[in-house]
Amino acid sequence: MLKKIFIILIFVVISFSIYTVFANVYSDYQYEQDISVLQREYSLSDSFSIKNPSSISIPAPMRRYIQYSIPNSRNLSTHVRINYSGKYRQQKYGEMHDFKMKSAYNLRTGEFVSEWVIEENKIIFNKLREVLLGDKRVYEFKKMGAKDQKSVYGDQAELFLKSRMIIDAVYFPYYYLGSSNINLAVMSGNRTLVKLNRVSNSIDFIFEFNEDKTLNSISSSQFLFGEDKVSLKAIYENYIDINNFKVPASIIVEIESNFDKYILYEAKIDNINYK
Image 1 (cartoon, helix red, strand yellow):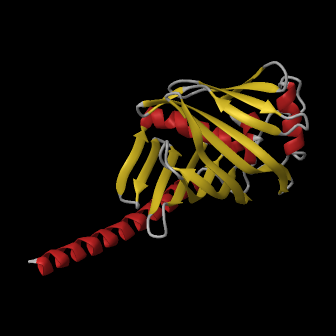
Image 2 (tube, rainbow, N blue to C red):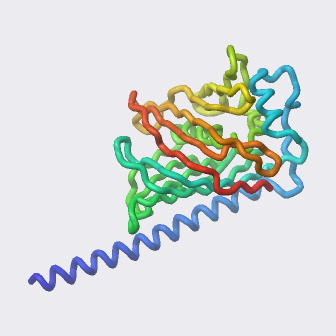
Image 3 (cartoon, helix red, strand yellow):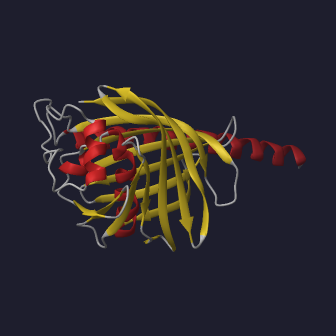
């Protein structure tokens, strides 16, 4: 009897392992398919048109930051790929785990896809899939690529994903001047109010700048995500030069969910590819 139970357990473990492998392979396939769709919207001959970075219509702190970050505003890329890695917290009070993230962005359409691989331990790898592409608005977190941990779709996912793009746009900062979905407003001191429109509900972001013209942080207003009311805050440090853009090498993203605030992830840039 014990021998039969042991054999059944071995069979279950092997079956689940095979299922997990195929689930992860399918997740990678989905990412590549999304990339293919994203790339249909641009060609290498495309350029990205932005407002004049020197225009006085742009609030002064943002104007100084853009001039500092992108000294040459010609022949800007419409398509950007970013890889970064660091520590990610899967649960509100849980420990942080190693992760790697790869994302591709289409700045002309304001769309992007991301795949996160989070190493819970040496055996278990969890995956987070983010898709803001046409009618697809998906935030999908899966345990071992198979078991659905937390997924949010539709309008509520869009609010979170567009906020994520605002946070990552520090690596292609001309997006703040080129997107038709973004409006800028003056605030006091070294701050600029950025309003994100054309979603089910508009979101406000406060950009706070350092005295040396670099961007210190971005804080979002509160919005509904799944069953929670959340807000995000990104903190940037250690500016470096990549492809003649000055961008932060380090990023820390905090999330406030139902009045609990904690670090969601902290990372360092691995690679940026502009096309």
